[in-house]
Image 1 (cartoon, one colour):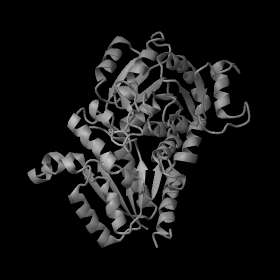
Image 2: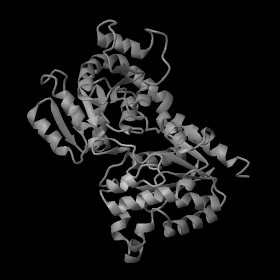
Image 3: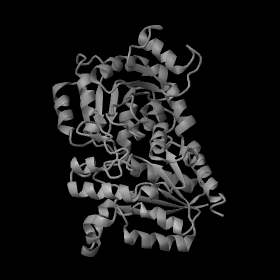
Image 4: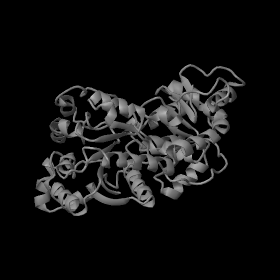
Length: 422
């Protein structure tokens, strides 16, 4: 099987879980015997482009003629079975779907965000969830509020791109929805069920989990939609040292808030931006990983990394987070599943879970509010040991590369053997 993987890498200065997932997926496919032909562009290329190339940048999200020329040559030379698209912006353009179809190559796209509809891709604006552009032929609110790169001109371009390519997106042969929530988003956009497959991402197996550490780890971009300010508000509602240590890793515009909290309280430690070894060490030093997203976060990679290391997760009940921790999964008979056991431990021998906190297979979810998160912190700390084995089991069953790569190859095979492909 021969697959073209198309992706516009985000800037290295803006760490991206999507870049990491694409790299990992290419490695996993190659290890499984699939011939992968990367068709990769990077936004880091833009500063070094020629004047002529830069002059075409304003139209590249809509068309990107150089990318279409290069892709057409690749498809003609190698005759792949499938093109797998991730992020097309800004240097590839959704037009790559049309180029592939012109060569008779079916297209799979993994949906990492909401950019079929939302110019920023995250359904989040001015500190709150926003879906003002849903159902509109042209995303005028995105232009008005400068949702793309805080620029009215670039927002107008992105909104126009989404309008122009509505038909392009509806022609994609198979969509990979990373969670059931993304599948619902695609159905709402008009994609029929038979063209949607729910398949999560995978992360490499770190091996047998180390014994639980103590306290909590938050590891994400330090920006409003990721909820670090929500977490710090909740943390301050407990006495210093009552919950162990809160470790915060990452960088972004809210870094000063984290640095101030670390200076104010000895139980808050700011780790900065970590490399892979640093991430592993931070996870192992902790007992629970926190995902405090304020938007409908699609599939935070940090949660899968936590489960792989046998660390349960405390998250907000938004986007794909309930799916990741198994809070939307069918429950085992009352009193027998890991969630019920953890609830009993946390609640003091069978007491009901406090309102607004839901125990899942591998963690807990709460409303994205400081009071709810503050109430959940001691429950998660008390129940971490009970859920740790279930967290690792959920990873092995649902997010291990062997499981996920087989699902992906089956998706490719189904398309390459379809009557339309023949």
